[in-house]
Length: 126
Image 1 (tube, rainbow, N blue to C red):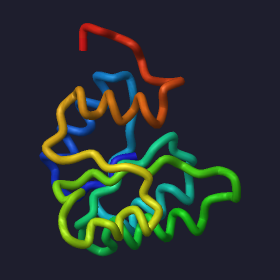
Image 2 (image 1 turned 45 degrees about the horizontal axis):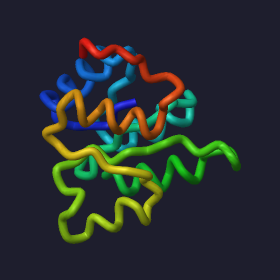
Image 3 (image 1 turned 30 degrees about the vertical axis):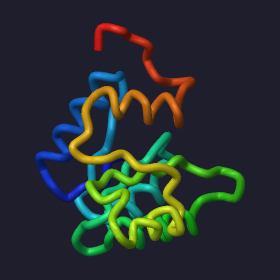
């Protein structure tokens, strides 16, 4: 799942992930991310930090609370602010990693290789 409120960032992330062989649901705020995660088990969640309705930190905390014990979904911050003041809150909330915007295919491939190596398509033509 991609939780991102900016349409351009949604589109870029979705196209890159599709090129790498993944299909994704896209939501535009943290509240919708929590709802979606309660209905479906995702392989990985990309979570923007700054979103309307509910931000990525609140959404991450809520998703972590509803996870079955022993079943942790990799959650990756998708933000331009991984090293900004206060970014330690991302990891304290339960995010596992960070991918910086603007991200390119190689950034996504490296992140997916780390968190989903068993399902990442190996295609050197990407």
